[in-house]
Image (cartoon, rainbow, N blue to C red; front, side):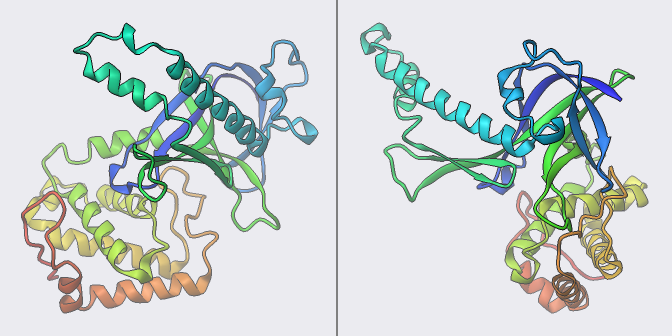
Length: 329
């Protein structure tokens, strides 16, 4: 099909402060027409610039990101955007130095602080590439190379206006288990995930608390380091659908629900398949070595079956609560 891409976006999400759990889209107003074609890999597509697209009407950023066979290259697009971002940082810093302090009101401390930040915005920001993403590391002022203020990843995202009026988003993603390093476009449901998390505990349940505790376990147990927040959220969403009675997610059920989700993760690892919540044909365990998955499953099984070890791991109080967790089955 031929789709008109209303705009090019860059997905922005934190990498340094994982607990922020926020994401947003930076919109860049570019329009072009392209075809969406399958890749043979579930969830992945290729974006082919339409043959009849007028070169003069296609933004130069897009033209320079088109590779062989007229395919939109996420790699080239990210490189181009990184260059544009660097120029923007340099320009912002230069403009800030050109601004006269005398034009600011004497009592406007906030404006002076902002101006000082902008005068060093390029110096304190480092850009680097990993895969299709651009990582932006911002240091504190005064400049301390080893003291990071925050870090974000930006990934090229294409917004498609569907025929039913619903917008679809595609993000640049490496194709796992490909014969060589390949990057394609995969449907993103980050906005739906955000909405789901926002409304997850409208009944004053403990679902978000379960997710927080799962992250504590993952962060404190070295053997589980390959489990990402996305893995944990996915299984929690599935278990929430299965246990649909709000009474099953009351705060006093926190320990039992935690064990249920851990058991579900272990079960899916045993099968070697952890389906994406929105794209069930996509296996979130793809790309992990079987031995690594086996070891994580064994560690989860060991923790689940040992109340003493689980309690020791959770000796500190769960973040955001004064409830002492009970892990008894």
